[in-house]
Length: 172
Image 1 (cartoon, one colour):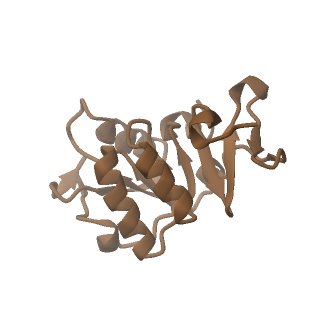
Image 2 (tube, rainbow, N blue to C red):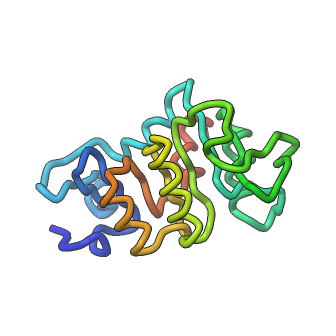
């Protein structure tokens, strides 16, 4: 059994106060710290709902950045996506929003594609407005980010790519 978050492996999430770890070597199942199996990636299952909306924090038109690649990938797959980037008026021709509180809808998932220091700020703002379903892309996490997620009872998936998890909806 894992002793700490660092021992949990390449992807982890917390649901209802229970830390869960993806254990790829065990058939892709997730084990809780109590040794009880849970459904894999509950945040990821939201991707199968037709009404899921995704706010992409760090969306951009810079094609060398994952914020661009992820935004366009989800859009191509038919997701209702909202670019959040205070430095942009538009992303891929769509209106960009300066922050989560400026969005015209309450997103189902807040997908974070920014450096860890900015991720902490995003998480604090998300928590303040009641958004707790977050997906922290690889590279956006840090020990401080993981601690904040756990200390503030977010439903999250971290260090796993939303583009990979969303392939099922796209039929890929």
